[in-house]
Image (tube, rainbow, N blue to C red; front, top):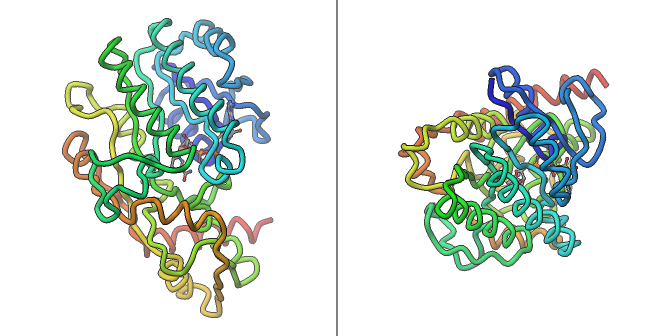
Length: 313
Ligand SMILES: NC(=O)c1ccc[n+]([C@@H]2O[C@H](COP(=O)([O-])OP(=O)(O)OC[C@H]3O[C@@H](n4cnc5c(N)ncnc54)[C@H](O)[C@@H]3O)[C@@H](O)[C@H]2O)c1
């Protein structure tokens, strides 16, 4: 039984990743800066601010932590509102995770990156794994830093660091935490509850997205991939790309009267600086990645799951 520390456990991804890790036999130590409402999912749970290196070290020593999944982060839209906080949490957090992991002999660190690590100068279509990375958001800068610092710790100290660049993650569980792809989740809530949605990016903004099922599958596959198979440590992963208008059309198959309008805000500019679609052939070659969900399967799953959840409330 491998003991895994998860930071930022109560977020959109941690909430679904933790039960899956437990079901696969991992011993999971869940941590965050806020108390969980549903304590069973996260048990055992400990408070941990990832800016606090000594507190992190104590948890790692007390519990014999062998792997860290570092999910605590300030996301893209929230980061643009408060860049200093993003600097402290995102840069400070990964520095602490890597340094404590090195000092305490933690075997493996997986810390997610994002398509936000790419920027306006990156080729936008079928963005390659290894290409120009000059993001212009603080979140993107922090993700490039995460990748490069993790790779540095791997070659300098032999720490087994891995990261994957998630696109926008779409789920019916915990709500997304302040990213630029949040529209692709909120649209389902508003469509089911009110029949209409006002989107904060324009109708034709094509963005890479992924179902939570594919996100969890990719995360576990990379976490468990034999180290000797990995030539890279930072990986593109793709699900499917779509625009708000394309998602709205799919949703109309379930809610024929659904109406969408558009009021682009500051997040439009962030979205336009990111890739439109992702080439994930390196992940396919090195650890067998393949997504299961396209736009139509994702829409059907989200509609059915959220409808029954919201009907019960
Ligand atoms: N969800 C997505 O669409 C998406 C896309 C690309 C990358 N990612 C990355 O995946 C990882 C997990 O994302 P998520 O969607 O679950 O994020 P989220 O925003 O839903 O959750 C982040 C969690 O971190 C916690 N947190 C904030 N500051 C903290 C601190 N100082 N110390 C400890 N915890 C703190 C928050 O309370 C929250 O529960 C992040 O690295 C994120 O950048 C997510």
